[in-house]
Structure formats: C-alpha cells, structure tokens
Image (cartoon, rainbow, N blue to C red; front, side, top):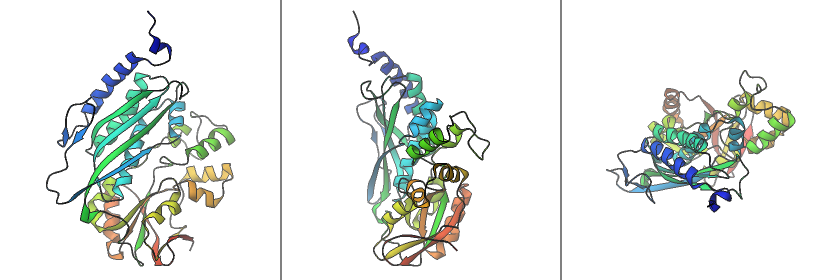
Length: 341
C-alpha cells in the first residue's frame, strides 16, 4: 500500500534517521547541569549551585537569509555555529552565562545528512560554551519551503545573579566605548549582501570575492563571533554591552543608553573590513544605510569607566579579539552620533 504521508512529501523514515543522528550529537553537549533523557518531550537543566538570587535570561533568534548562502554553497555546519554564538552574545550583554539551548529546523524535504551537519555546528557551539543542547524540533513542511531550502532558529537560556545583571542603567557621561572586532557580516544584512554579490557582481559561491584571495562562500559564511571568552572575565567591570546586529551601531548601542546619555562614536577609530567596502562600492549603498544594515567590523561595544579600559581590553586581547577605543558617552539626548577626527 502507498505511504500516503510520504506521497505528500513528508518522510517519517528520514525523520527517524535524522533523530538518530541528532541524538548522538546532542549527547556530546551534556553538562553536569543536564537532567532527563535525550529525546524526551522537554529538556531539563539545573540552576548552577551557589547562586544567591539567580535570574534566567532568555533569547530567541535566527540566522536570517544566511541560510540561503549555506544551501547554495552546500556548507551547512557553520550556520549552526552562527546561531549559537549569536544567541550567546544576546544574553552576554545582560551579564548572563549560557545554560541550555533549543534549536528549530524547518525544511521542505528532510535530508538527514543536511540536518546532521546543521546540528553538528550547533553542538560545536554549545560545547564551546559548556552549554547543554537540551532539545529542539525538526519540521518537514513541503508546502511551505522550496526543495533544498530550510530555516534555522534557536532559543537560549542563561543565568545571572540579579545584582550583577546589566541593563544599561550604570552608563554615565564620561564612560568610554570599546569596540570589539567582528568576524565578517555575522548574521545580518544578508538580503542586501546577496543582492549585491550574486546580482550586481554576478558572482557565485565558488568565485573569488573581490580584493581577497578567498571564495565568496568562505567570506559570506564566516562564523558569527562569540564574545563570551573576551568579556566574561571582566563582566563586573562593564557598565553596559551592546551586540551589534541588525540596525548596526546606531540601532543597537542606543538600546543601552539611559536618558541624558549620548554615545559619540569616532568613525575613524577603526577600518572597515574588505567585505563592507566592496559591498558599499559595488552596491552603491549610502554611508547611512551601511551603518544601519551592517556591523561594519564592530560586533560588540562595551561601555566602561575610564579606569577599567586597560583591563577590559587586555581580556579581549587574551581571547584574541581586537578592540578599538571608539569614543565616549556625553551628556545629551539619548542616541548615537558619529564624528571623525
């Protein structure tokens, strides 16, 4: 008898094979805080012992249309790691340490090898942060996704002592802005970047990216950097952190500025990586739009007191992350203003 579900495009056999492979990867991320069994209906994780007033910090995000570049290149594990690192950074800005991660993969036709590669990247990112991959969902939606396409999202759970949580309320005039180097586009602006690279420049993933000796695939799939190791050793020295994602520096730094504080950023304090210069020139994109869409080489900004600058930058250097002094916080209307010396 015909398998009617398979005839509609949903393969239960492929799902079972994917679950088996994924289960093996999930097991590699188990930490001493993990409870329950791999494959259960829900994931469980303990709060770390010794905390006085723990607060859970949660965040959900995706990697946007970067997945289309991954699918086009046939390289699937890096976007899984992107997803984890992006989410780690989102709770790091509140001073939180990661506890557990949940992933969601949706596709038209489930290919176990592709699903495995995606979760390999997720598991790698979880292990790098001593975080349990507590569960997830793999959905086959043939009526929703074109063949070969998929979407990827994740939810992270972290924890911080309530008294140590960062909200931006400690920021004050006179504080210094420290910019941390990004590792390419990270996970934002890919709809515009793809339009320029594959449309205007008519390049494909195997071609050499302009002004580099690397392929388009490798430049566009550079993994979203995690700033955990660079920041967590000095987290108590920091007044605020801003993860520079969609919206760029002006759209994200403003989120941690209290009333009466304006961030003044010296636009000449660092050099844009090649990828952004190429995109701006080839796409004829205005400076204002570049600043709103891309991170432009700055993936995280720390707001610190002047006496803490040296120690905070030293921690980043030890984690092999370059930093620059971007400017300062001044009294004024909350917002971000660019200057150039």
